[in-house]
Length: 629
Image 1 (cartoon, one colour):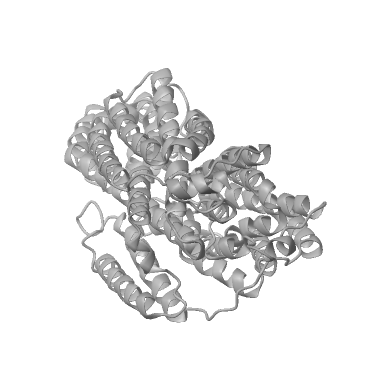
Image 2: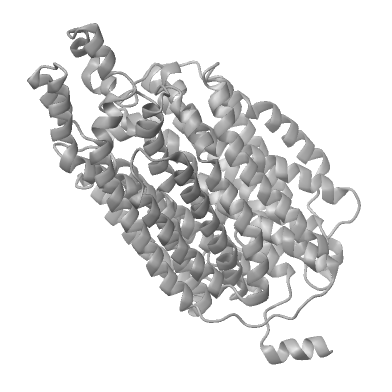
């Protein structure tokens, strides 16, 4: 996954190449172990999307009760927050103290916290707090794994095989993000502890295997840790992401909590600390972020387009899951308890799309330049959002799957060329720092996107759902006072209920109101069709706003992408090894997108290593001289 300077430092240069690249069986041991680590981490990043309802039932807590929503959000997003904050710094630590040593430590940390999660014995809010803290610990271990795995591969493989190895590692991220949904859906209904226990034997085996077999054969680069930069960056980013999490919750009589003093303090204070972080980095002799890299137009525009595209698509998965779980699947006969697993299955075309487009876009951008493909990807991504916008709420699945496939294709078309363009715009000694910066921008933007999408849809619901809810409940015999109370509850609760696979009507009314009705009326209210039909119109209003916002962001990003300028011409390499490496690098780029989509941080270290392993970009005249020589 993402590493800071580790990937660049690990890519051997000159005389160091022979020492760093190890032949024989060791390279396959290194690839197998790091791929196992990334697979385990990405499975755990997505497994809770499906398993959360069973976990909350198991610890006997209602995540939708007043005061409990924060537990749901922190369990869901805590892992992402920790990896976003730590992955850059831990890559730098790996450069300084040994990548294998830090990777082994990460494997061990991840395993220990998986064990602690699997033995959760408490119930209620105590159990929820325990799971949140243990998930944060898992995130620390995952950050160690993400930050150093690609650098270990770079150290182990010679240049002509490195791209293929990194591609395998990237595909593991795709497999993990998909397997997590299926494993969570299968294990959680049997016993929710199994969701965490499944990582324990893999973690124990991988930790022992890594300790016995992996070697620190890369070059170390002693440097001072930028403590002021690391601390200010962590404090600022954590404050902003915390503000986003609590801003999604109702406050007072407001639909959401964006006016809550604590949220305002987090957002404004976090922004102020990040401004201070920029000042610190400009003066630091060994900065965590190299802000001078923004002097390159290619890096500046590529980073901005990466940030904006993550902002546009980061909340997409959540909105599509709510659309499927809260409306479409129940209308087509699925119980609310079944919808989490089937939502994951019905979204498979999205994964297929970027699996198909990523390698092809990477190969074509190597030959013809990144700008046309990255820009076209963003424009088509905007078109895909607009197509989602015109689909009826109770859509035909073939049309929905086609738009999902198109969205996946556009993501693959954009990410690989954009990442390659950004990395190739940097000087050799700045590629690791640039990779870490790009990844951090995209991670933070993905979390912000979740907040933006939820806010836009909730505001759309707030404008029309209360009237629809009141009239629908009264029409089924609910007392007007009870109907009024249920209709005026914050609509974000209905969204969270649909996301968790709960029956929102049952949650809103409670057993007392339902027991007062004739059995047939109560069965109808809690059946498959009442709530989906009730919420379809108001949800569509909010969804139209969200998709229009995302399409506009993509078009702005497309303009910035074109302004990056044309790519310089590279010298061609005609060997089969080069072609083999190019395929692997394209796969690594696809792995980056898959990881970003499930929130694990991406495999930008692979791209960083690629940039170091490839010959530097040269102008046309230099390329001709190189070929002629």
